[in-house]
Length: 287
Ligand code: SF4
Ligand code: SF4
Image (cartoon, rainbow, N blue to C red; front, side, top):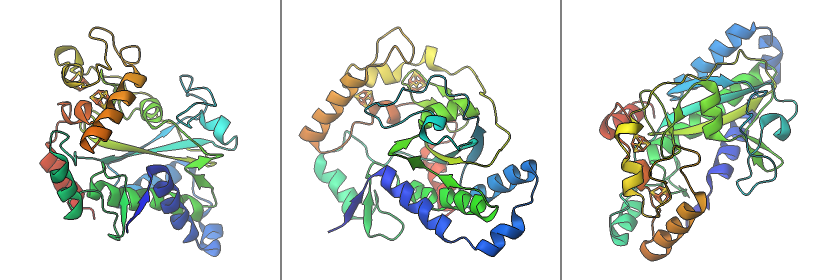
């Protein structure tokens, strides 16, 4: 029977494996690079392993972070880990995997024939809504960053005390995207077709700033019209437009009755400039 690993555990295990590969002697000899070189080197190391983009968020920002405790087990970086000096924010392209209009048997067939949800070793099903190529890139890009920082004498961690940085907020703070009507972060090129990962480090890296741009949301509204749970108000913008409990209830119903997760707001969003086929090809070239 395949192991089921949730996203949080999967990322923590992957990063721990990357950090474990450190050589103490190399760490001492390389710990002298300038802050600029360190940031450039970190970005290069992660992009070489498939990260689409990497930016840095200032842990002193995050004024909109949810107060702790909260059901999502997230919090401001400095509350999670007071030693944190930078939040490394990484995005990996993510084409949709499952068509939630498919009958259950077809989704199960996708899983059985390996077209959805298999980890790089083929042994674990990792949160099966993730594209397998995205999972493979995630499992190599984030540990590469942790390893690079470790080689330069710095700590890196994805969570502490069971808390993580809010990925969407980190992406906004670092300028990787802006909130769309659905509440998903929209990147200038990838739209919502991305997974956001974060790494806290005690390295002082020059922070990037929010990069606010106009989305096409005002003339679109597909997330509102295709939402099965009526989770969006018709006029307001995110966050007041979105009711998380309505979404959760609807997703549970879809899961119980149809055996899959609702992805309507994700799948139907047209904000990406690259097609899902092109995103898949992009990922294929990096694994
Ligand atoms: S579906 Fe349309 S309105 Fe909703 S987030 Fe995407 S672009 Fe914006
Ligand atoms: S996941 Fe489904 S129910 Fe939740 S907001 Fe998106 S479309 Fe609506």
